[in-house]
Length: 165
Image 1 (cartoon, rainbow, N blue to C red):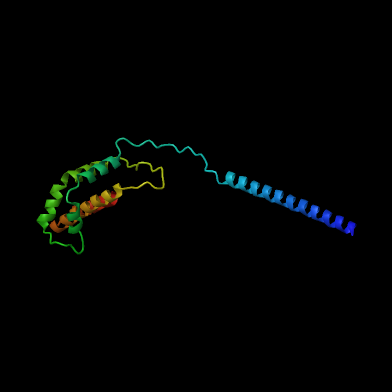
Image 2: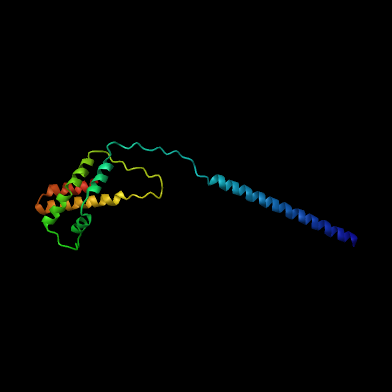
């Protein structure tokens, strides 16, 4: 009976040693996996060179032309398939004469190389693209006015300038 008691005691001690060893081994495995994950998910340090922007840059001309734009909402409505108001040819020509400086600045920019400013983040916004669309709509209006006057080559050139933009 005493031997049986010692045997049970030895078995319990051995069981505790095995359980302790398993816990230490599990902790070691978890630690190794954690270190491996940390090393594997480290963000690489990459030196991205900043491009040299051309000077003069067509981007600057396009941005300046979009800042000179007047009556953008009326231009949008005038080229719409379902305009809210009726625009005569004289009204459309008035929009073009009001925006002649913007068109001239835009066309000066076509002579230079275009390079977009570098974006260094996924959260970078590009608000100037909306302004560039407004300039393209002005070119579309110019093409429509020239077509209504019968200047077909001028209308095509205006539309090609919109594509070029």
